[in-house]
Length: 199
Ligand code: DX5
Ligand code: ZN
Image 1 (cartoon, helix red, strand yellow):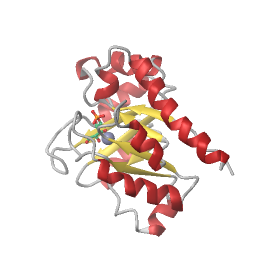
Image 2: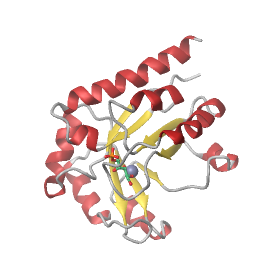
Image 3: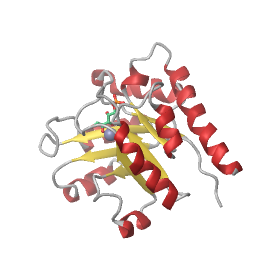
C-alpha cells in the first residue's frame, strides 16, 4: 500500500499580490510543495481575486511549480478550459458533502474547508475534523487536504484527524521565518503518518 506523504501548499491569498511572482518564489524557496491559488469570482463568495490570465503569467514564471487552483466560482465549467490553458496541476471545487461516496471514490483528492470560503486569516473551524477523520478511516490512501486557518496552533488537530495535504496562508505568509513554519507543519503531519504506518 503506497505510504501517504505530507504536502504543504501555502495559499497566496493574503500575500502581497502586487508581488505575486516574488511572493510565490519565496514560498517555494521556503520549502512549499505546491502553491494554492484561490480563484474567486465575487459571486460564489463575496470576494474577487484573479482568474486564468494571472495564473498563466505565474505559470510562465514558474514552469516547474505545482499549482493548485481553488475554484470558488459560480459556474466552474466555464473556468475549466481557460484554467487548463494556464496549465494548473490540480483543481479544488466545492463538491457535495463527503458522504456522497461515489464522488469521493472517483477523486484522487478530497479537500475539507476549515474556514468559510472567501477570505484568508479566519479562525480555524475545529468542528470540521470529524469530516477529515471519516475520510481517512474510509479512504486510507486518499490525499486529504485541509484549507483555512491552519498554522502552528492548529496543525496537530489536522494531522491527528488524518490530513496529509496542508493549505496554510496567513500563518506562513506573515511568519518571520516561513521555512520554519513549513517545517513545523510538515513534522506534525509526518509524525502522524509514521505513527499510523506503524500500527
Ligand atoms: C479561503 C481560502 C483559503 C485561505 C487560506 O477561502 O480558500 O485557501 O486563503 O488562508 P489562511 O491560512 O490565512 O486561512
Ligand atoms: Zn483555498
